[in-house]
Image (tube, rainbow, N blue to C red; front, side, top):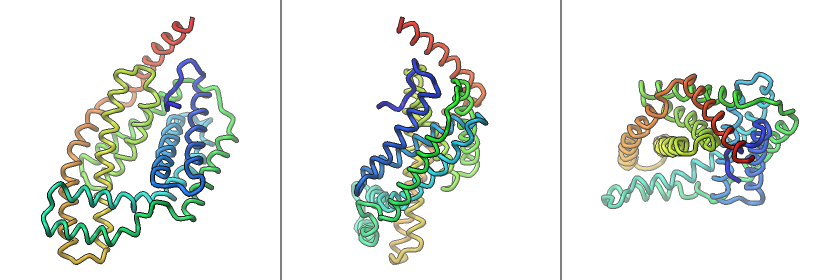
Length: 297
């Protein structure tokens, strides 16, 4: 089922449906012995559910759902070690390029062999148990909450709050574009990406285009973070010093290529102030729901 609002249904019921669908989807992916594809899908379900919860941050009556968010975050963290191990090998391949020199190929092959054992297709049993338990707890927190009769104003307020968080993260990243600040920008941007996707029915043309650009920036920042993880692991590895320096230089150069494009896209995405964006979305909502009701008659 598409991750987007159905305009003819009550907003509160729609968000409850989306949350339950993503949490249930995550639990379904972790059934049995999940492979790389299932783990990736689970992490995506968790991120989408957390993005929905961010839309409810502005309503004091919905604060009990913070427990649901904490459990979802715990589930994601339980699977993050697997994610880092799986991504390291793909990052090594990306650094090789189409025609690596003999010394570069030798250094990367040595690194690949050293880390091959950490790229197992399945996550370890304890991490799986932790993730499943956290997802079950998040579902229980959601089920135990009585959904209020909030309207689209609540979502627009939550969207503006998330958007302001992204603007602040962007300012910090532009002032000092180091790995930590760019990763913080990526985390804020991922919420924005999924919220744009959820709200696309309000005006598909512009919002679909914005979602595509935000998703592109998030992918670039994700690749930048992959290089940062590799460089961190590399520093404490057993590879010969000359090989470590050679690979570290390659990763740093790749980061230098990725960051400018990502920041340029983010400058455009976050050019508007949060309050202005909120008012615009509310106008989109009034127009879209008027059309939806009219077409149903």
